[in-house]
Length: 240
Image 1 (cartoon, rainbow, N blue to C red):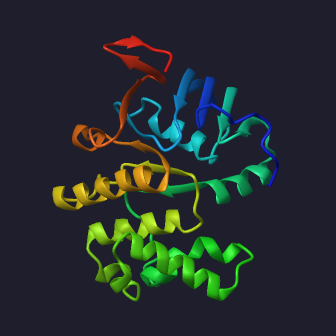
Image 2: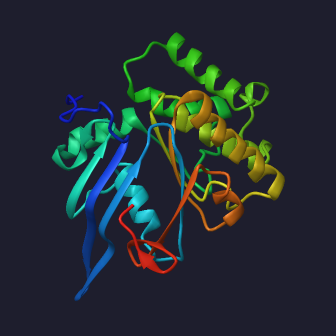
Image 3: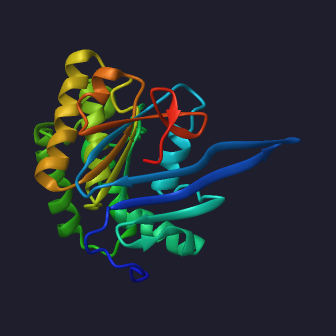
């Protein structure tokens, strides 16, 4: 893994400066994110809100290293993501980011244990170490007694907890969550939000969550709103 190229002392965990993403769709230039400035503290739980097409998922994908910005600066945990090659970015993402999806993205033919183990299969770990890590995160999300169950034998809330365990198993410092409670009933959603809050508070995970639900956003330490690729407050663009 490349060494950090910026000093992390007294710096935010995430720093975006003039972050812009544009692409061409047919003959039209599309800019889902424009000149965005953002800072996120270590172990902060941040909620991003905004209408469809506001740039929330684009920003989430940039923070997760799934996509690369067109312009601007993006520093996460001491790494300048704009200076990493594609292969370096792939490795950085595997080691530093856990992605939590709305629809879980679990493999139906695998047990909870096997789904959580998947990210570790590409790492040079012994079978004993993989078992230790998987059992530890399943215990953390209160699913130790369901590790041999397949997704169709679990409730929606339990499936999402398996997905969170999978995101955690490599011990990444950053979790990004795209509508993690959007497919859950209120009780299950509350349990997932409590789990995320605990991960930030007790395990020092930095969490960036996209949501349309004001109740979900209220669980975060801070809420920001995006509209047309810009952060806004009371209808006015803001820097961060």
